[in-house]
Length: 271
Ligand code: 13P
Ligand code: ZN
Image (cartoon, rainbow, N blue to C red; front, side, top):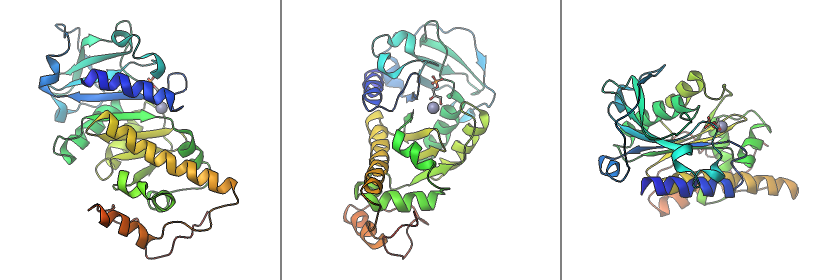
C-alpha cells in the first residue's frame, strides 16, 4: 500500500509539471505492518550517515533513488526506489529492497532529519515527506524578499483553501545548496514549527500522514501562487481575503492558523 501510494504520487508529481528531469524525491517512514508487504532482503553493507538520526533508530524508510525521473518511477520501482533500514543507533543505513544499481536521493539528509522532527511533533502520525519543484512558488521567490509571515499573509489571502490546507504556514528558508547538510539542518529547524517549507529559488518540502495529504498541501500553496500570478497578469492584486475573513474561514472548520502570521490590517498587499 505504501509503495503503491508512492508510485501514484510520483506519477501525479510528473503530471502536475513539478518534476522536470530528476526533480523531486519522496520518503516514507514505514510502519512495521507495511514491511510484510515488501520482499525485504537480508540487507547489504552499512553506509554511515554524516548526521546520525537516533530518533529513527531501527526504522525502515521507503525512498526514491538519486537521479530518478518521477514520470518513470512506477515503471521500474525496484530501480527508482527502495527500502532502507536504519541501524540500531540511527548512525547508518543499508538497503533491504530495491535501489537496484542506484543510490538513495541526494536529499536523504533533509528527509531523515525532517522525519525525526515531524515524527515527534505529530506523535508519529506524519510518515511521508515529499520534495518537488512547483514553478509558481519558485517564481514567487524572485519577486521580493519574503519571510514566513509576509509569504503566508499573501498566500492565505488569495484563496480560502490556503489557511485550511496549510494552517501551519509555509516556512520560507533562504537559499542553501541542494542536498547539503546545511539545507537539511535549516529544514529540520523550520519543521519544529511548520509542516511545509519553501526552499528559496528551489522548491517545496512537505510532511504529512499520507502521500495524498502531502501532495494536497503543496497543491494548495502552488494554486495560491498561480492565482497571484494570474491576478498580477490581470493588472495586479487590489484586494484579497482580509485577516478577519481568513480567521473566520479557519474558525468555521475548527482550524487554528499558525500564530504570528495574521495581523489586524486589511487585505491589501505590499507587492
Ligand atoms: P535527487 O534526484 O537526488 O532526488 O535530487 C532531485 C532534487 O530535486 C534535488 O533537490
Ligand atoms: Zn530539488
